[in-house]
Length: 276
Length: 212
Ligand SMILES: Nc1ncnc2c1ncn2[C@@H]1O[C@H](COP(=O)(O)OP(=O)(O)OP(=O)(O)O)[C@@H](O)[C@H]1O
Ligand SMILES: [Mg+2]
Image (cartoon, rainbow over all chains, first blue to last red; front, top):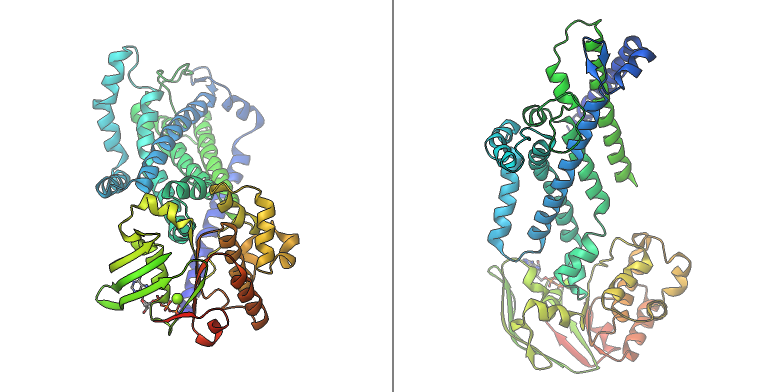
């Protein structure tokens, strides 16, 4: 029975991984067929203007990075603080409240975050800066809400595993709980924490709904975080191109390849961190 | 030095020991013997109050250390006291670091001076130095069970605690090494409580023997 089960498992693992490899190969093949060097230099420019035959997506690439890294920074600060409080606090109710809040946050669909932000953060920011409505800032803040539960759950898991294994040893040797956390747990978890941050980054890059609804989708290059801008994912969603031979379709395809490629790279980095 | 009065412990409805009275004399070795599962290790957890981190335990009585009742102390005070009552557990609980760091990490936290000298001295005392002197910076998990057990004993000696709680410190060592470490402990100037399965073994070390 056990043998059968492990054989089945092996079969499904093999099947799904070969499927992924197949998709990747197919995409690579299509890329070679689809793009020539001229096209690629066109895509890597900053202007998108269909009339003028300009299909540059570098601006969207920049916006994606700007929003993702802002959100990542905010989410890291909050997640790290929340997890430290959960770990160090002696107030059981506070710990319970924070843990349940994180779980609840992970269950809320992104559309709801976006709607809530449209009614709260957006008017709030425009009272201080009337020229700014939908912007990189708004999208970053809301995107960070999406990343906080992902990151926090990973951090908490790392902290809990370490404390289950080593807390009694360290306290036996006269360490305080604070010493244990700051001098042992943190020192021994930064590698796995980096893995969690990168996982959150890949989530941030791949997010579509929040960027689409809150970043404003302007095609011009953003000069500050109060500017409206468009991410790669939003761009894919917004450009209607069903003519396979058109340059617009090719450009959209190129966006998808970039997204997929960045995801592969990030996952590869996580794996290589874990193996060491 | 350490006075245990009318101590009773139970986990849930399971009584482990009742009305235990033990007097530990300063700078002498005291042995605790008893069958497996009788509650010897649990007694040590009571003494350093790590029992507080166990689930559903009930503890009554007094544990007087230099006249203060440990059971009534705050966790902050206990943190300081535990540095002076070091518990060496039955399973070698090494940390996921190099051999050297396993010792140096704790020494640095307790602001011990001349760390390197003291580490070497502690390793010499448990007859480990010669075996590992050229791989001090390799992972401590690569040590054998008996070597790990001596490493955590060295870690305890390094901190120079007033009281050493040794839970079967020579369980996985051969007779010769057990004997040598026994002699070392006999000459060591501090209060030692040692757990063992066998009365015959501890007779060589001390006349203060308590059976649980
Ligand atoms: N946290 C706990 N919760 C419930 N029962 C426990 C707990 N810890 C220990 N016990 C039980 O208490 C009894 C005493 O355990 P303890 O480890 O103190 O025995 P011991 O005398 O050290 O045995 P050994 O010589 O085998 O090490 C055992 O029956 C054990 O199953
Ligand atoms: Mg035991």
